[in-house]
Image (tube, rainbow, N blue to C red; front, side):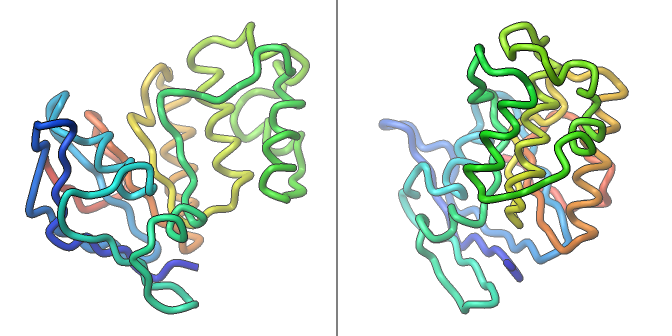
Length: 201
């Protein structure tokens, strides 16, 4: 389990453009962090740095866990659950089949019916994913996060494409994750109802 994540003087560049530099923060177990800022300021890029998809131009990210301290991006990635704009769904698989695939990927054995009920997809469980709306695809992405059992959730605009009920559902899921000792970092234009810290890029 991750005890803390610390960013030390991070800088990020895409091509010749520096998106941000000198960024430092610390997030501890059981807490959430909102990443705010206008479009193009580097919110998604920061999440990608944390996930290990990008290498920082300067600075480092340090994870303290039960196994010690590490700034290795590949090791950090093994602790991360990702919810981005690409949903990674196979259009020909049904909702339940897709969730079963993710469970096998993460070596998990969840109660599929209960999990689909939690994300409001019980009626759609036998639908091929190609028939899902954007909001339903987002809900299935949340189910994937829950199946992963990864301690650090990175969410890029988690409320996108969701109605009020869906937004409440994902907010509740984030709160439960933090209450169970997990961590959440969300790039968002909308406030997170978690009493979280925030940074603005």
